[in-house]
Amino acid sequence: MIPMNDPPEDPPPQVTIFDVRRDIEDEIAGRSALREILTTLDRMLWFAWSRPEWSFKQVPPSKRQHVFDAEASATARDVAIEQVKEAADMAWKVEAFAAIDYVCRLREEFTTDAVWWKLAQRGVGLPREPRAMGAIMRKAVLAGLCEPTNQTRKSVRVDCHRRPLQVWKSKVKGIR
Image (cartoon, rainbow, N blue to C red; front, top):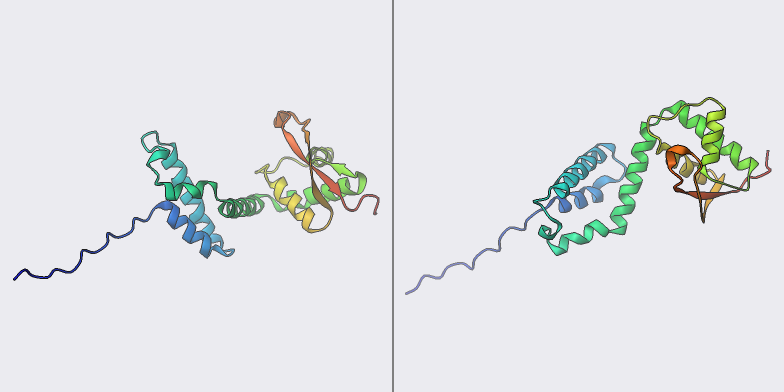
């Protein structure tokens, strides 16, 4: 008599860094400790993808979709903006918001070049993280000072190398 064996077990599923990152994103809900873990995972991912011996073709097709995932991209954007905002000096944030308020009341449309000009005119130096301006602009939108348009204009600031900047529309022009 031939002994009856149990059917072979399915191999355990392979867990990749993409799976771990997705699970953490599901859990994040505003907790900064998990944001640090996400940052570490992003660095690990960048390291893995920058290695020539670990080519894109070695990533299973089912995992490639996470690179072009709109929801994950939005989450990463929000986490990055929050990190940048937290890194900026409080005094600089107050000055930047005041400069945005000033420009909004003076002009109907503007770019952040006008805000940077007003900060320079007031003698306010650069923040530790120049991307903090994006976080402050989002705060201005939430405060009802301005809104983005579908237009861009080339920057006149030398450090921007004439890159296109978002044009913003004031909601408070002329209001004192």
